[in-house]
Image 1 (cartoon, rainbow, N blue to C red):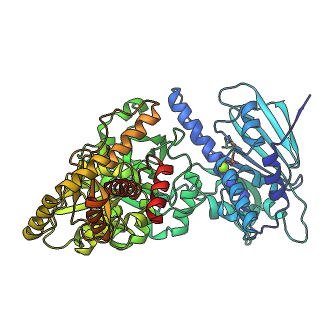
Image 2 (image 1 turned 180 degrees about the vertical axis):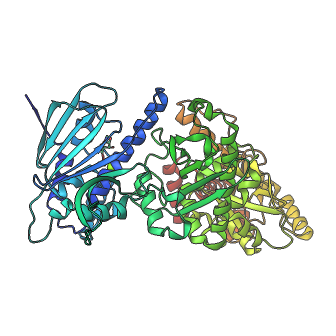
Length: 638
Ligand code: ADP
Ligand code: MG
């Protein structure tokens, strides 16, 4: 009694699209099915290793049957249980198909109809582009029972128990009848299939076999002048089985590399960069690495699996070997193939192998080297990389407590006051005036707003560029660095800027001294403020808030945020010291001085308004917005 099931709605839409596709490269269905078969054999191989079995005669087989118009593909891979058949072939949760569907949705929204099928690993469903009916007979390596899945791709499928010797999967395509647009009979043609395998699947590491007809010379008698032949069948391996990374570099096109990446690492976008290199030495290996052009959606979740594929002499031993990459390079995808790893030691032991550490170090060096030359040769490309994965490098630097400082510091990028764009720390330092000892920085979220901060304006007026810290971790990164090229880091919103000449300093000191009473009076009016002083830091703006030595405003924000996240009250002491600085060249100072002898209440009101404004500029909320608005209005109305 067969079970009838419906496709999940999403799958049905995708299938509909596939079946009615007028796409001209329908032939890619073969590549997709072969790629699945190869994946399944990989999985079986790993399974066998873990279970102490010796995998034998791993192969993919193609059979053509002209009479019944069927193309059959058989593998002796991991197979599928009944549940897996339903899960994998009844729903589209699978990488290639899912990415394809997402892209399709975007395309619909944008209302263009660029042909997109060819760009994707579209997966199993592509079989329906060429078939009226698809039958899958599969037996899981974990089960004695085989199951048969049959569908015409319209709305549902049937599932029945079936008989099958050994584990693996057989897929039978009942090819469509030829029509005006397409010939499906070509997929029954032995030569055509041989060509397609060569074209799309040559590098598959398992033999793809097919019985081909050959003409055999009949040994006749010596006198017979024209030799005679008879047809015979021979099982032939159609692919060269040389994996991409073992091919001659000169014969590999950029497209080959991109395609390989998209197929193996489930990205529908081309990679930003590929790194392909071999190392000869105490441990020899070849490595093909990729830096993705975008951040995977699950990158910061636990679902993301970092690591590289590990091969020993072309044979996969681990799919996500994490010990090949330092943590901060977890975005790198790719593989390592080494002839120096012994297969007879268990995979557990491999983890601890010193050989892996050697490889890891070489990979780390190589990737960092490539990044560094990208930064030099193609800063725009590097910027793209930095926006996706720069945070990881910063965490790497911070987490290593500075141990990786030398490796990573030249790769850092920040927004700066130079032109509001991302700039490498190295370039930034080059823009410093010759005599500059310190690197000034300010913290915030929006570089455009940061460029307008009074301190930044002041420093710019002295031709001193400022580093903009926009990530929460940035200040900690600078602390970890300590110095960069002998320049200490200095928070421009904290303490004294030390920019003035001795005379200027002296003059300011006197001015502060002369107005001691007024400044003291203002301070009394502002309970949160520990000091009110005149300052040369300001160019045009009337006031600003600076932090005293010790905790910075940015750290105060971090602590407040951490307290909020853990649901606790902020610790009272965890506050930066607030100093209100006044610009003695701004008109408001003249007003304050004049009013101090005649109208102390007004001075108090102005002080409070100025303080609130300074808070706003610094990005702090003002304590009582209503009160603030009232005071401003009253002052305006005078
Ligand atoms: P993808 O290969 O991108 O995961 P596919 O649509 O090609 O998506 O395949 C869907 C899933 O079906 C695979 O992930 C795999 O779990 C399963 N599958 C397909 N073909 C086979 C096969 N020959 N043997 C075992 N499982 C298979
Ligand atoms: Mg697939």
